[in-house]
Amino acid sequence: MIQLESLVALQDQTIQSLNEEIFRQQQDIVKLLRRLEAVEERLLELKDQADIAGNERPPHW
Image 1 (cartoon, rainbow, N blue to C red):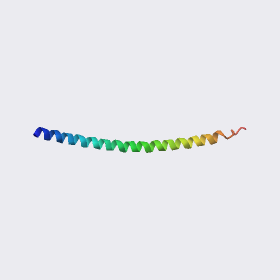
Image 2: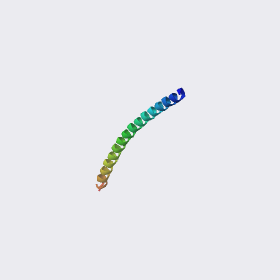
Image 3: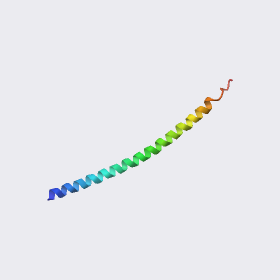
Image 4: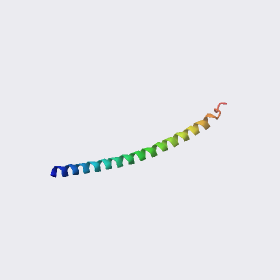
């Protein structure tokens, strides 16, 4: 009986550790998604600037 109680306690501890790790990973995923969105927005801004600059004549014309 003591062995079963020890096993249950160990499993509870393992489950708690796994839940904490999943929570941390979810937080990391959210942060990475925000950074990815910011990079995508910046790339679109740079593309728009390049498109505008690409339509202008060079100064020697």
